[in-house]
Length: 256
Image (cartoon, rainbow, N blue to C red; front, side, top):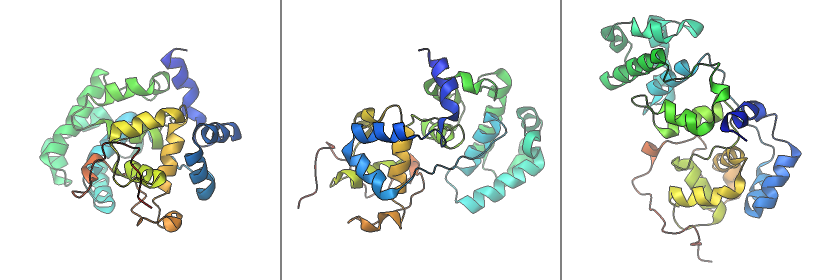
């Protein structure tokens, strides 16, 4: 089946499409994940609406390396200067002078990234809302990461929480690897490539598995686990702890 056909059918699958058959497929593929799913309960991914890929990526750029409240305040000021809601367009941002954007609290690097995003949207490198459903995950990652300041992790978050794509496994996410480490009973955090290889058994529902790994780090959900819980919020590669050690194999287990 062509990638575009898969994308069209995939977009609306989450969260309503998490059917009994999908749960059974994951349970058959991975008994360890099945036990985690039983303990944590129903799948409850909450998606966030958005007006356009341009607006969603612009918000992501503003939020990078900032606490939520501070980032929300800055983005609100940016919208006041550019346009609110559907009025927040690439053309409006390109027409907004850089000093005005800097006055909203943006750094020089983020201002340059927003301008680059707007320019690439104008040129068609960033797909429109109408084009997105026709594109597969890999093509969206390839096109969005052409923008300055947009990496694969940022696009994967958009694929999961804005587009509801069902088969995304963000292995560069620190919390994903932490959840995987606890689920597998490993001594050390696994390498991204090891999680990616293991996660092949979760296709085509890797987003669902990712959600459960995040959920397992919730303080309430993690109370039955031996290791201390950490934030259940997705964490970019930049959030990696300086004390994190990289395991050479996902098969290494905790000693009894």
